Length: 227
Image 1 (cartoon, rainbow, N blue to C red):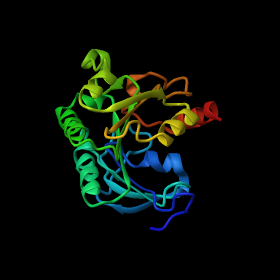
Image 2: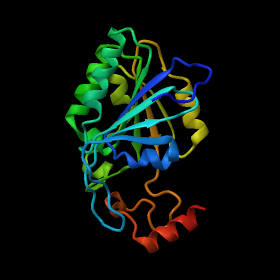
Image 3: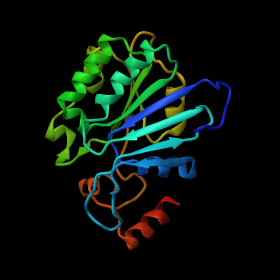
């Protein structure tokens, strides 16, 4: 799919995420075009359950000509295909960047750290990992389930250059992404420190909303609070 060109018409990005694809449509609206649905199930409004969904999205962004995302339903699988994609791109002489979106709870998984070690070893500076660090995962706070701190230091020990920003500060996020790679010869880790359910009084920092989707009344209240 051809998208809008900007100052760098040859810029490409591949984005791989272990989170369901609907968040991209929520962020980019009609710019997010669903190309192929591999598993025709998704989150259901008003139900307190999550149903897996895998899909490909094409997202038209001002600074990126071709942006696609692979959304993978199972936790910890995002980094597994993403990091070798970056190595393959470099070996093929391609200039695009690979971005993988991870959650903090996902970083409990050994496969994430195996992939991180792989990326550091191969000095994949065309690779960026963004971690949504909201300190809540399936069974409780990350500090209680499996403490990840010092989080940035762990990634640095694996050969990554790291930055931490307020994940709700869009200018800060944009500035960090504009500075990629953070250091030549190293993969980049951006830690986006966030609050789950931020802006909605009954959702903020509530574990139940790790799973739940709002019913119509709750949705109406949430939209009014966010307006």
